Length: 288
Image (cartoon, rainbow, N blue to C red; front, side, top):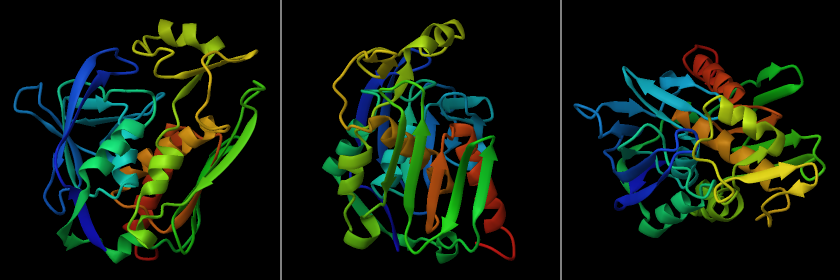
């Protein structure tokens, strides 16, 4: 399977969810084998931050990467778009500490990638990185995330909230890129799902210095009487967004193993724990 990069550059500006800082992002083609990585062009010497599991420094309500003194936060939606659209190598230049939230989903990123297209490169993906030989489970009380050997990659997620408007939701999505050389289902089924929050938690999060850039324009908000800012794009938009987050976090592996990724009430922290376990097995003698 050939590696791919974007065919031409993508530029986007927006506000970070937690920092409230306006940043500009340029995604440009990258060399074969370079992977996906960020470059903080606003800092001296423009330090590079690799989009890898080893670079994860924080998972509180978003995923943050760090290399040395440089960091970048809320990377999951952009990285999910690159991985979901089949982009293995990309240089992501950013002039601030947080990726813009845009409309709260990955739709704009994914549609821009589809617009410019991708190109094959003279490098292939290692077959060893694609195989999973045994199930892996990570849990915290009744929340869990797992990777189960399967013929094709699939992501399934379940959530359960007391608020009636959300309740119990399940969704499953299988990338179609390998089979059809098309990533249309990511654009239409997963990328448009927006981040969501609970009304009773908003003041606490603001007091903690979070969601400074959050608004009813870039996040769904749910209360005891229902959604504050309908309509939803999907009846089960919240759980689809959780799949988006899972895809973004697991993209830090570089490539998804052929596995059924199954999660229930999980979090960025559990997602990253699972990715660490996969890496441990990938480097051992008896597994991937």
